[in-house]
Length: 347
View 1 (tube, rainbow, N blue to C red):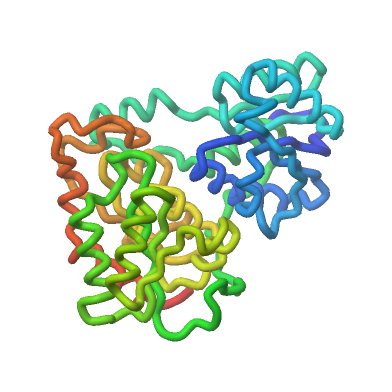
View 2 (view 1 turned 180 degrees about the vertical axis):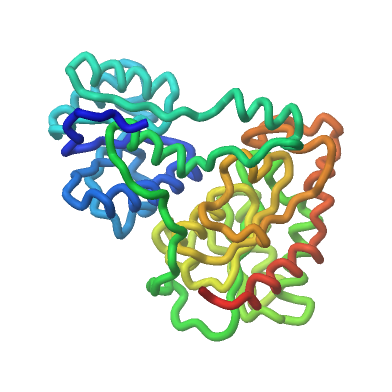
């Protein structure tokens, strides 16, 4: 609940250094807060690489060097000293890990108010144990971020889903229907198996060339090798690795008609720009509060299996060994959902 009879902060520092998808959800909450309090000064403390997520928001920035000078707990005390020199008078810790707790303590010792996120860890464990059966979806992460701001005294409505606006297109003038495909994730329980991702590309790009361009989002290494192989195989496929940076990838997603993604960063990038998204869920579950904010329910594709969800973040190995939660999501079902979302009337 908002704290009453206390002056509202004038310069708020918001701390979240990882993971990528979690940082990409933060702009939704900040947009609602700053719309309600246009005179509020906001500084985001995060890794420099995440700055493109906040394009269009007038926020200050405090670089957090998690691999260098801010790596240790002592480094977080140094970060706190840097934050105090900026003149912040309140902290919203939307991360709540050991490192951020050290930062919070350093700020509190200097009389600066701190509010910390409540992640609902016990609720999430219960959700996993019962497979979500008999439980309502848990509070969305974006709304948990909003709750932290409210604890500092701010009163505002939940953020509305993003409305699509024009973005520059890093691949030039668009002709026809463009779709994206992001089959990878940091964990195997959230990664599209190789035979299925090959077939999805074949159906999207090669079977009838029904889509004019197909872009494959990936990281480097084996992921980039797969994307480049598909690019050589199908003339309308483009492998994105090495061709665009974060900001360019976000601009491209804003120009797509639909993107197919796992429970991963690209799902949240699509939510940032309002692009229709087909999200594939394996070991994890959208009811845990990590679905792309504002994403249509009809874009969610998951298997009703007694063994899932088995993990909050998808890091646990499959106890059955076959990742049936992923193989049950056939390429034909994936493409059918893409066609359904593309045919949907535009808001």
